[in-house]
Length: 361
Image (tube, rainbow, N blue to C red; front, side, top):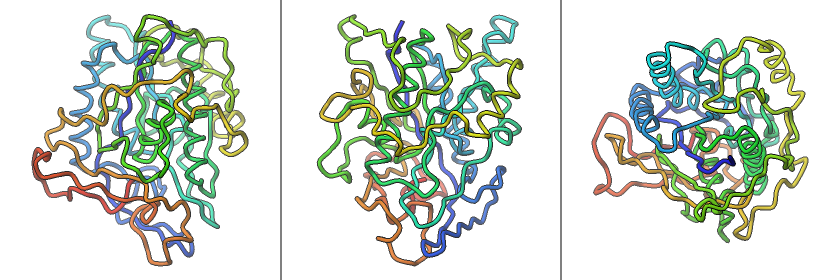
């Protein structure tokens, strides 16, 4: 059974950090559990959003069969309440750990950093993330890795397309009907474009929304008429890496101790990661979309969040730090993106956090 639904969410509220674009020095007032300055945790309000999101994800039909997340702490922290609630429900129903959910950490849907003459901080190694999030799938090997010096806007979109090409092929092979992705604003927007094949003439156009903990739903085009294309034998065009354990044919990825150390070592060493820029990736522009194309049935819906849609973001058109001057900037891509103000009529509540953010992360 080929993959039919892709659920996408952006992480919840997080604290700010700054970068000096002249030196590439990142600073933050709140230290991350990972020790990476570009990897802050969620705020208390962000944790509330993640819990509200978890309740919504549990009610989705068809139910989630695989979980993919950016390697950044805020994205893992956002999806973790769903994993915990799912596992708690599974244990209650079956009194067995055979159906426990595991998170596949995929760098290919990780944060976008603009082009820079210096290297951006890398995300924490898988071994560190496993200490913080025990439900991470130790056997999964990330399919795509962004370059450390950042990406152009075109490279970002092609990187996301390559990652999705590999992910969809995996899930087609495993017989999974629905998956969820936890990522960042720029990637959430890029996901909408590469899945539908709709790349606007001007990259800064507001086409797909990316509110904190908003939920987007994409459905495979040929599934509407009941005709599905089996891509289980297709090889990922830009990421021919080892797939996860083929024994997990149904349900959410199962946790397993066997081979965990080997899988973690391969992930840490990057032996199977495919750097962005090495290949143009799959053809998706011109309405094609990755792996046959997808339709957007829900665009960053926030109706289940008490605060409604918040911290919207769009591209500014800039793609490198040389274009934004030398002043300290809040967030890795401040100056490379534009905040989207939410109309007052659409706000559902007030709290001590701003409605718009000074960055997109």
